[in-house]
Length: 460
Image 1 (cartoon, helix red, strand yellow):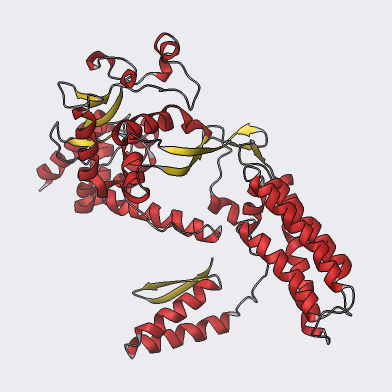
Image 2 (cartoon, rainbow, N blue to C red):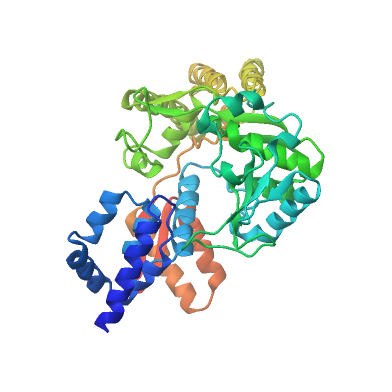
């Protein structure tokens, strides 16, 4: 048994050494750890002279590899964990879930089909090792999005070129399909066992779910070249049509006027920020600048965003209070004219959003409407007038994804009562009611987790 475990460690070490600079997926090491995690750590330390944790730290393994080494999870389990975490963050930021969520690994046949088509048209070729490259110079107009010239790229910055130039027809050609490396997941293809290139995945998903042409394509400004440029080339070469009519690229987020990076120690996740701020405040902060403009994150600016967001929330809360206590139902004299004036703020909002989604000016229009409501709404106002003002503020805020009407927070006792009712419904096999209660709690920011020890809950 000891010899078997030692062999596992030896294989694991060899594997780690061979793949340190890659995006590691250490399934074999995970299996070894599942067999005897404690024994492996002890034998590793005895053999190498340092702990496995220290080894990983020193050699700068990727986070995914580290998780596989220490957690015993499979590649797909870790992928699913981060997928779930991503969509949980999206929900808290009030970002709507796409109509289609397609894992890249689910379209392998489609990748092979489009690559084969590009080869048949002469836009792509296979190298001796099975790598399939796109002939960049065969596509007329390459570089029009990024305003780059192919000859300048060829003779200028080497960092813009893609590796593997020794087997390419041209150093500017980019990968459509690449051979597998040891330990990586792979799929069979006519050229080699491997996986699709990064760019082709986007073209295939876009074609499958949106068609040969799309209206709007978005992304970070760092993706303009080469990623989006390559998407255009391969999509238009394959489909013979304009790939995207409009391109929207957002600028970078800086932290205290410095680029955000882990090495600089100024890297924050959404969850880090949620420990201090309501994520609606973060959303409001992101909307405070045009998406094409760099955005600087700082404690002072977040506090300013908090104050701005709370101005809107407070105004809606005041309108609700006035509505509850108003006596007159129908509009009073002069209120129709005031509502017509209030409509001008909505027009300014629309104009700002029509101007390349200028959310900064759109938020300014909401502030003007809030100021107007605070000035003209009072105890003598009619319900119709108060309701119209509230609905206008909420409609414009909702377009921006801002939740400005706060729900009353459930008391712990109320939550426990609903959980007890859900448990009773499950015992009676009334799963529809159980699901209703879970959704009701989730809508109010309460997340349930069913465990062996019972139901656990937390506030989102």
